[in-house]
Length: 288
Image (tube, rainbow, N blue to C red; front, top):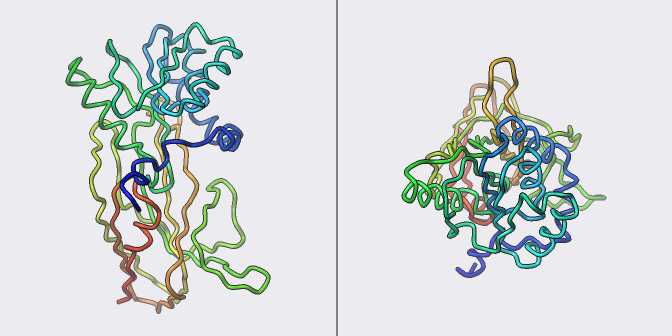
């Protein structure tokens, strides 16, 4: 992959893909709930990588003054029109800019950034938030509230069906975390391999080693990567607002059988924003 291709990963998502994101009820409802819980009238809010502007719209409905930062010129034009059509054109300023370089002229209270992808691959969530956070602190001496506040990354072995009308093809796949898939069998509980706190997160390699101890015979042929985003903290008496990205399931080279008492250890390494291939090619499995 060329450096130019890597730089563009996740940066220009065409308009025709945004219907799927807008119609993802779990995603949109979770962010809406978090924004309604945190954003208050008069708050200055920035959305980084704003796409069609739906999250900026939610913040504006709470009475905030919003700056909506989007790098894709076609989406800038379209989101301006959509926000105006939805009655918030006077509260949302859509700005065409690279979210990793843009710095506000005055301090902001809250930053919303949904440049999230499974396992934090492909998109530049960490890079953009790190850059904005450091620039904001250097200029104004403080860090805004972040939505999301953190991401938890986990992994677990699974037995995945890869037969398609008699054609066996183990390939990577995405899977909804909100629907039980009969084609996927859990083999072990997930283990957390990294926690990202967006008040401190930096772009750095995740070199991970995870072990699973088996108490009974098992077989697996893939690993499921889990991405849980914490969108709002827990006021007394209220539940945490969270949202899961789609699961990413990566096949192993062959089916792996495990005896009771054995331990499966895996290692892998990637940097947030890398391609899926970087993770899959680094994945190594050991049975002891």
